[in-house]
Image (tube, rainbow, N blue to C red):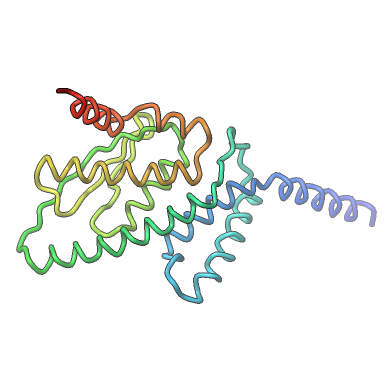
Length: 211
């Protein structure tokens, strides 16, 4: 009788340790990815159930497969998080209309695979940006180069250099939204420090100041 009790206590102790190691910010980030995958941000009653289920699944995954602590931890900014959700929803609506127009007005729609280099070193931001880009109609992630921080995005309706740059900037805007909503102070500093978008803006300002 003593051995079964000791085993039971040891099992409960191990379970408590695993539950105690659950990282709530990471679970919330996984829940956000869950909601994006299952279109949980649509205005419907099922979205609340998806939210709760997504969080429970995230916690269960972290209990069954403990992960090392993420340092630095993601920073959650509620205002920017709401803006992120609204931005993704708006992009989905606009892109759906654009894809519909392309399908019914063109026999063969142009498309291109565009390489987009991320401006931060955050794996979480890269994953979230890739998932969000894939759920927006007209764009699909075909390859991820983690070592080079590059996303290869298939874009519908992109046939010239101007459209390629416009599509690349759309991915950068999406990345920026995720960094401002979930990124650390280091991610935000890296985003504001440079990147092609910032360089272009600087050149535009310098060009406007020239006599």
